[in-house]
Image 1 (cartoon, one colour):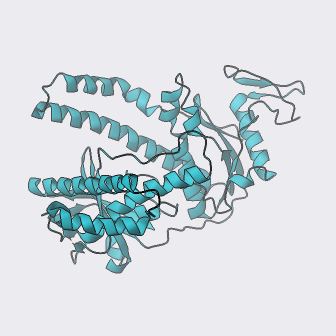
Image 2: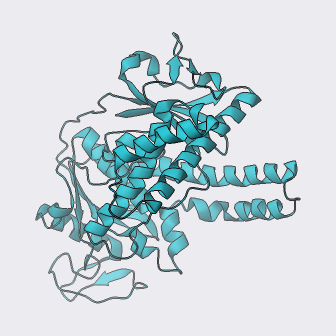
Image 3: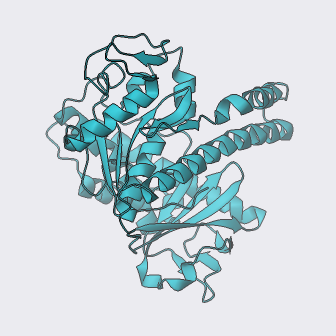
Length: 401
């Protein structure tokens, strides 16, 4: 699947209609979650039962009936995805919280399947044909949706962000660009001092996007509480605050995508640590810096481009990669503040460089093969705004930048 995204230009009343459709999707999803919670223990609630319940909602509520029937089904599918994820975590005995489904408070998108929309012949306009009153929307962007047939478009999604509204198309197309072998191999050790250090000794600087924008974000946040609740000034202040966070998010995505593509393009094998970032975020002293580094997003893009470019991406266990000497394999204990690896065998290296070499050696010995796939696909979530049917594939390159 390939996701193409356009900026939407419309009239104010059309934006209000999109907001109404988004609120309806949130209502349907929450009602489906409540239906699952209140169901008797002996009742079998699955995806088909929730789809059947969506029909009852259409008959009961007029504003639900105004939404396209397939969009209503897509809303219940979102509820079922949350329920199924909770069941899977319980069956696999995932440690900690299992992710019990929660009610949604700030939904930002409405999704249509193969009906409820009509693409203009020029493919620069789209008409939403349900009874919400959205009508014809102008599409702004340079993506090549016009090169694909309408039948290959499987889903259409309207997304609300801080800087406006967007339309996403999920196109049934392969996104593969097999590159010729380079004969190069690389190990990556991510960190806070440097974004990553590779096994060749290169240190990629940590951009620290949130830290650089933090003072401006805090100023925008203070401006919100200086305005009267419910006033237009407060809404504008909230919009400015949201835009600053959105800019940081886009900077992180573009940075991770650019580096991941470069690494995968010039190396046949890419080895990286199989980090559990959620556990690392429990360290309250470093949580903000770890989140700002966006390691998991970088890993997702590595796996995606490894699949797209025909490379091998291997995740290795991170245990002792910093303590073990890459030359003599002796464990040299050192604290986190010690940034130089000094071994009795005479090897003196920067700590992260030594770890990157160990990561590459473990990957080459296939110690980390159990945590990766030969094609580089190892993550179960998508980047950016993913569509419901694409949750279990990484063969998507989102243009949501």
